[in-house]
Image 1 (cartoon, rainbow, N blue to C red):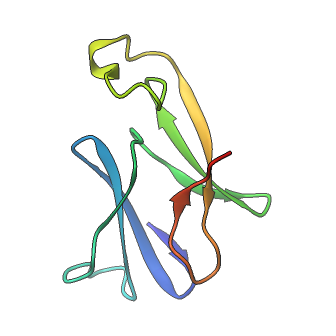
Image 2 (image 1 turned 30 degrees about the horizontal axis):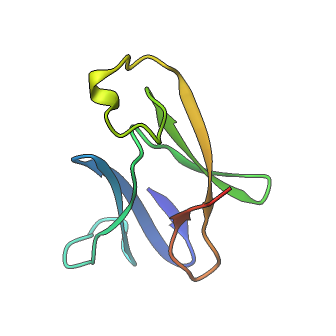
Amino acid sequence: MIPKDGRYWLFFKHGWWTHYVSSPSPLDFSDQPVSRLGYVHAAEVFHWRDTWWITHCSGDPTEFRYRQSNRTRGLYLGRLDWPVGGLPRLADD
């Protein structure tokens, strides 16, 4: 869970995708809209040097069929575009 912009953000994996939900309370996320962030496995979100980052482990994030491949390919790091007051999204770069 990440406190940001007066809300608490929870990132979780469900099915193939990582989703997020935010709430004004760290103890109650019910009745809050859930959004899909992207195809990310075992994500950790963190802020470092004025940039938001997200991790992805096991396979190349562009390879959607990685379940059939070697799942021990390592750790990937991607940038999140997460402006103040806005929603997080995977950065294009």
